[in-house]
Length: 220
Image 1 (spheres, rainbow, N blue to C red):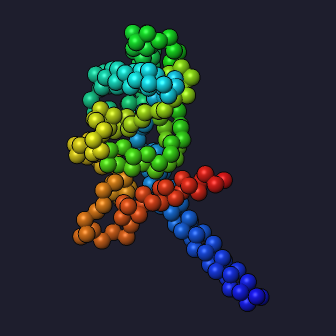
Image 2: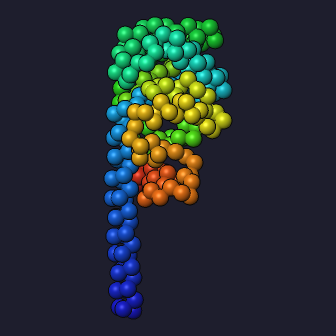
């Protein structure tokens, strides 16, 4: 019996040690990817008043109107800082755009706008996977903001494409590729690489790490 306890203890130790090494390795990789992304992209985040069908539909209508305003008025070739400056200087106009839609649809919800750091879980946008972490985001909260959210990448301009079919157009992904390190961009790819790719870490492996880190964070 004593011998069995020793063996069991040893196995548990090895399991914990292996898990610890895996967590350290995954954490270091995901942290590096998230750090670069958080410094180079700007996310757009809109929350509905509630999860009712009416409020969710309103959220999407407001989203469409706001993104249309931004697309029509944001100067072409605006970089990250120029995009943030535009959002700050046009905050009143954007808020009025959202409020006009809400009133037109027969609601009287207040609207709050923020440009601030915000935590996001691991998210898939089309065929790109973004790791969990804190990102700077332009956020719109409708009413109580208690409903499901909608998000996209505002800079570079992935918000102006439809990823509903599961694939972001190559032209839009190229915008993202130009501002990221090659390995970081490759890690975001949802599809598997070809067999000829000999890199140490495939996108699938890194996506598992994204989810693992998110799960571990939930334990503490």
